[in-house]
Amino acid sequence: MSAFLSRTEVWVFALATAAFLALYWAFRGAPIGQAADDEGTDAPRAAYRDRVIGAMVVGLLLIIGGAYIALARSLLWSIPVFAIGFGLVLTLIAFNQRYRHASPALRRTIDLSNTALTIALVAGILIVINVLAFRYGGRAIDFTRERTFSLESLTNNQLKTLDRPVTFTLIAGKSPLAVLQSDRIQQVLDLYKAANPDRIRVETLNPFVEPEKYEAIAKRVPGVAVTQGGGVLIAYGAGEKAAYSVVRTSELFDLPRSGRVEDQSALYESTFHGETAITSALIALREGKKPKIFFTTGHGERSINEARPREPGIGVWHARLAATGAEVAELNLIESEIPADASLLIVVGPKSPFRTEEVSKLRGYLDRGQPALMLLGNQERTGLEELLHSYNIDFGPGTIVDRRLSAPGRPQFVYVPMTPDLRHPVVDSLISRFVLLPSASPIRILGFGGSAPVNTNLIGTPLLRTSSFSWAESDLTKRPVEYDQGPDEKGPLTVGVTVNNKPDAEGKSDGDPRLVLFSSPAMADNDLLQEEPTNQDLLMNAIAWLRGRPDLQGIAPRTHVSMTLLADPVLRFRLIMVPTVMAVLLVIALGVSTYVARRE
Image (cartoon, rainbow, N blue to C red):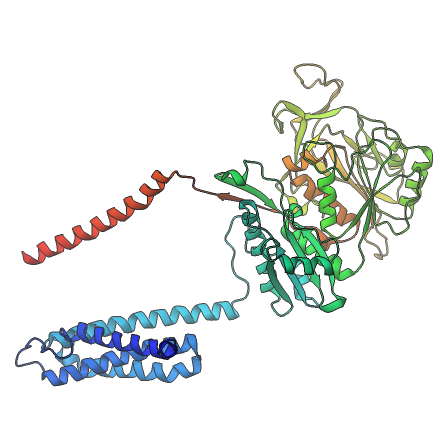
């Protein structure tokens, strides 16, 4: 008996029978076996009315059955059922219209059947439109403010040209923070899968619930180590030949600025770098060769291994570079030569000058056409002044301050807007945003603004300029800090420049990138990147431009604010019960008023 009752067909037949009896009763005015009300001499005979009502109910049930067959079985098999149901109901309505005024039962049956047909037709049209839109409508329209359900064209191009299967495994726990973050990661992974469902597969794994599966992955991918905080494991290819990359959750999100999620904060704001980090890691896997990026050391530079927000270091930037698939290491030019396979050399805020032999190594590296990124100012002598001068760059005197676009109480912590006036691939994707540059120095480009260049084969281009309310302050010790027309230079002032080769007159070369300089040595510090994430995006765009990889830039992070309603049990009870009780009372009042009106 249990096996018989577990069959779907039995329950479908039972529901159809119950629906037939209920509709027949509603149309006829009395259940089967009981006589209906006498409708007068002009109405058709009771037996005829019962046959019409029964056939009408069967037709409506056939329409419902056709919908069930279309959803559960096949659209093709549902067509004849729909045709019989609609044909039967329409025929009965047409033949019995003449009895609408003579028979209340037939009038009720015809009106209700017309209403049911209208609802069925409207529902069918909406379903067909949605099916056609999803199947042939192309890309969905995303109206969210942070474009949550959209991928950049760069990502779509990578996904649609995959030549191997790709498996994304989301590894996350069940803590409140992990749930918030994994939901956001799952959204972007679903978009990846939708872009190329034949090549992309998305899986989830909780290492605490499925330890055996996690251990198997850890053995297959040594060093996966994503248990703490979670992450995304990317498998490019299948079987033993698959290549793997791990993007940790800490590399996908900036630290929240407000409260702890574990404390059930009402407001959780996160800046999501998921698309750029995952796409960059996928590109690195497809290339099969990781770029090597070196940071100079030995001159008091900040450590690339220190990622704690309150400690001096650039570990957060290091983690972001590693997430793009780069091999990042420190390089002491006193002890080592610059490797021939170095993709980029970065100099960040040296406290002591480079030695002559180190400068020679740097010059030889740059003269070979290799790119460099430098974060330098005029507060410390670096020993690189002559090298920069040969690249048509000099520092002006003073420290830039801004009374309007600056951090509260710190006028030398200047916010620099990226405006359409200075268009460049490094900043084009960041237009209308601000970077935070503490203690920046004015930069002068030789050959720009009437001055003569030292090297005519190189072109310097302004990348960032401060606002017109800024100036280069010659004395930060005075209080208050005010502009002095004599020693101080009035803004706007250049604080970021690019240098590239002069384009070939024959059009064979567009001018290879050589150098990017920002005049704020501390702009990549961990606490600065937490305070203003745009700093990191600007630096990553600069690296992509220097490497000649426009496919690694232009994906701006998405800032998402999740709001949670916090309420004590009493308030929650009121929020639920008050609307419920009011709705019940409203229904009762409408019923009573209708009853009274009909009696009168």
